[in-house]
Image 1: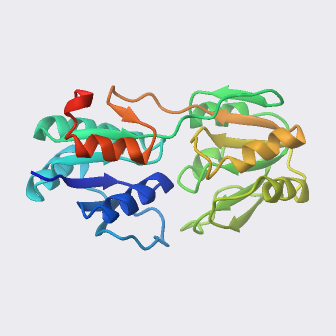
Image 2: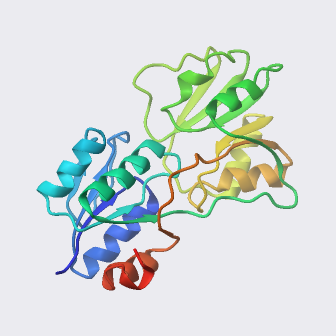
Length: 251
């Protein structure tokens, strides 16, 4: 039986996979969490919004006769990824994660690694600095205990309510970005520290490379630890898995 695929998306990799399966004429749906207002057009049907936890996702898989799930969510979308592991196990649905390799510290990098958002907030408890807070809009409020900094916030969409940060400037822009452009941005705003999630991939890496180029420190938030699951790092590997129904990978 040909696969009926559900792609848990929101990343460049998910969009690339959607295009690839469309070219092959596969039946597939791309699901968005609904946190970004301006969604890109896609060559396959899409749905927007949460599933209602594990039970809701499991019911969706049953109702739509989904045979395969590819988790191509952001590497920090831990709850969705965990829900996918459990729901697919409950419904005997095949699951594969399409993940970006994390960024690795290299010569010229000045990184301080922290385990999560809370640890990043603690690390910012010192004197006031000009900070590029490159974490998206969902966690801005968690940085309210550090109001002394001047924050540069680059967001895909404007926040629903003003962030509780007394000194901030918002730039609305969608990547991918260039190293030259981000270096200029950091210099124009006299940034002294970049705070970023280790999302990996190339689409958001420009700020990290720009910080290296300028000798700026980076407060790097490590990825959450997830339950064991099968993972691949390319769209071609996903297509191979789908073509062989997971049997050659033991999935």
